[in-house]
View (cartoon, rainbow, N blue to C red):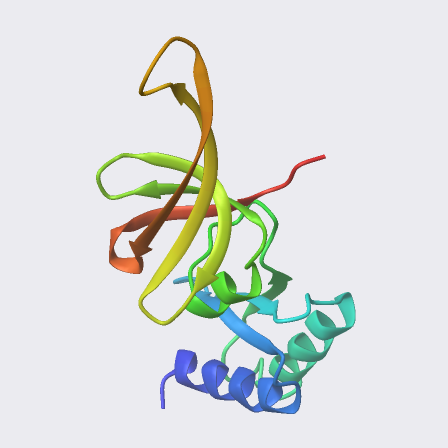
Length: 155
């Protein structure tokens, strides 16, 4: 069993105890710096990070392999990576960059296993006459066409 497999198994065991948490990213550098990024359906607390950190640290032998460990939550400015993150953020505003280099800032209305649905309004010229009118747009985007999606915070 590789070192990364051991760490993955320890994280999986700890996350079984709290099913609202999930692993976003796990990386281990050549110098054995372990970086774990977590998220949760209801957010994530400092205690959640501490619990996962202890589960890893207490079950690995530093005599066998020295390592450093960092466990953190997915930050607000972190791109969404998993379908579960999209589902958790329904109702929030996203800035989505597509594979065709298009950028859309819109409200995430729905997310399923294949695609997301975005809704936004725009001021566009009237079809008849002068002036502009507010038009509501809705678009479904498959995950395969999303290059990056970040939750935008509006104050």
